Length: 195
Image (cartoon, rainbow, N blue to C red; front, top):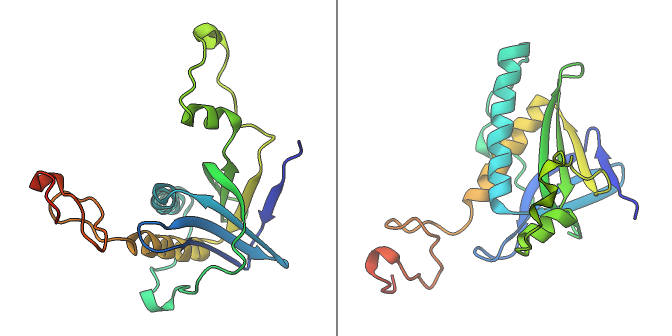
């Protein structure tokens, strides 16, 4: 089966967003450009880690290569618009890759689809130990991927929106840290009593 590489270098818009009410949200990365719209689904923790690692990448690029970074923009200036519709999931993200291109002073983000090996691990399949002598496999080249190239300013804007999206969910319980549902939750710190 052939794979697709959805490349946006650069996109008109690249954002993290969600669909659904808090507690049932589905997270997406969405890129728009050249009359195309691509949305890929991923987990909340992946969005959070992506924002964190992009911040580290920008800091490292500034330290090592002297890249000028924009100041953090005020919250009101950022992109607060909803995801573009229709939000059709192209694939579910299994692996995220980051790189900094020194020649163009851009950040490259690559989201790679979940592969068969990852799906097997998620299902709890155990492989035989006979394959221990084999070298670890590279990410499957036959998997769909979304590749986006961003300027440092666009990367900073993506980071800020991604953090707002992650933090816009259910508030944490002040005792146990688990998310609070509108109807409350069974708090382990209260021995399971409804809170």
